[in-house]
Image (cartoon, rainbow over all chains, first blue to last red; front, side, top):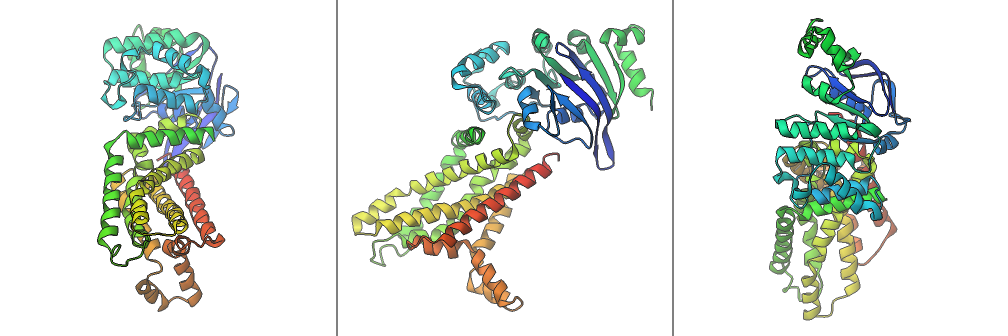
Length: 238
Length: 243
């Protein structure tokens, strides 16, 4: 589903992403972890065709991110960090706009909106303006937006950031329930989350991949603690 | 087309879902009628809307930037630009969609000045074709102001800066044919250049259209002007999307 080859990106003198390669199949939930500023978001933004890579390439759902950005965006549901949303719209009119842009036909529209509203439990806030929603609901609207038209690839940038423990669990459950038919990339810096949702994880530090394995293996190598493993691997290089 | 329409619809809804739109409409309509009736509308004793069309170029200097300033600045400030471009929308489609929404908004503002037309028709027998071309010219003219505003909005995430810069740039194009401006330019520019500057003025091209003379060169000036700035806006968004 996603095939990343030697992806690099620099901002002036800073190398944000340095020669990153990995592959994800359908059914995989990949956890992207790493300290702040490690290059997680930059990598995800390159995959979503928001920024152009300086080197390397990637195929998403068979489409090259440099040559076919529009097709890639049709195949991806992307949830940006901090979930920016059009605050003055109601939940329903916002989802309608997303349906318009993602070319969901008029006939299927109601059904599709009903589906994503159901998955994200947004029934009660359908007619509410987005800016008046609580943070948890805003995140869910952000997630609902990414699910419209059922894209085969989901890229979620810190989907549980700033949520209370119950909401975090809800979002994780949502991700797990959708995992079967999709390839999903989730970035986080909460280590328990990795074990709860991901079947694979990549540790990224200062732009490069320092580990690519499963959360269970991380725990094993860290002597029973993922925290310790994370600390070793990201601090050890200093 | 479909995507442009979707973006346009969203922008139009955004205008009317905040009080800003109504405030702008109110202020525009107030000044449009106030300046017309307090101007020499009655004194000239002629049933036409010359006074109204005379002061439109001045009014647009403030109206268009106020309408256009949020188009991209707000997207940058709230970060929704990232959301927008993660969906299957190209830069061109987004720019054109937003621009059309703002243009329609100005069109609505112009349409709402219809009581002036009714008043004039009640008071005398105006040439309604000239009034019609006057409105057409005004609509095209407003498009030029707006395209400058959308460009200025694309360079900054601050709506205030966007407003001020576009007021300044619009003024340059409005005052380009003023004698005082041309006199200064004449002192150091060759005559051909001075004429070129004079022809860049929005008002010069507006003058003939509103007199009922539809000339190809005036209309093509507007269309070229708008296309050029739209292209510049697309470039700007493309360049600065990563920032």
